[in-house]
Length: 251
Image 1 (tube, rainbow, N blue to C red):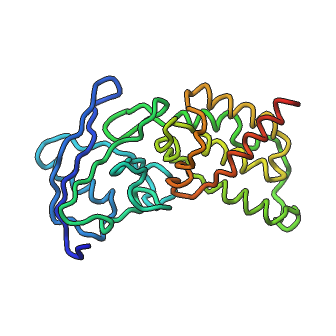
Image 2 (cartoon, helix red, strand yellow):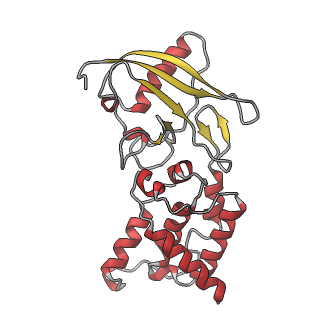
Image 3 (cartoon, rainbow, N blue to C red):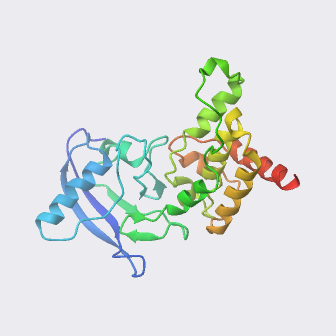
């Protein structure tokens, strides 16, 4: 791997809006530092385009710290790029070589329609959360954590599930465009904690039903979602969600 600056060919998906057809457009970027993040490299390209009077490439970003989940890009056929356990904003150009051709596309899922270029509409996730991904029952003032006995294994599992940032990599990676890893993480987060017990049954029913209404596919059991998830959300959460859903239906 070269330690100097790089010249790269970028093939980036350009699409004016969700109604018009899109296509891959080739761009050349030069003198790219290996210490740049992938988004900083796109910033450099956009500056070049603006200086030439061309339209910049639309893409989502916010925190650029791997927290918000906005930087949703399919890079060389992988969600968030070639590295595991990171988001696109945490991907550095040293992961590529001088002279490489890099293909950049938006998430591909009917439930994530393209808005423009690399930006997709992920509001389906918001609607799923609105169906139960919260605690609405008044549980009183906050107590000291040591006053609420929770087994460490369950507390750790809830914490790990809560690490999901809702980026949608699981959906983009799944051949069925399934959102089950995302929904399972949000259901598990509360099902494992005392505060989430009051609405446990309705939460599972409502969130799973909304997921289906949004048109997401079913789980393929291939595990690709867990592999590409930047936060390593476990498939065990899907098993827990299925159990929660079935038990709620029985009751």
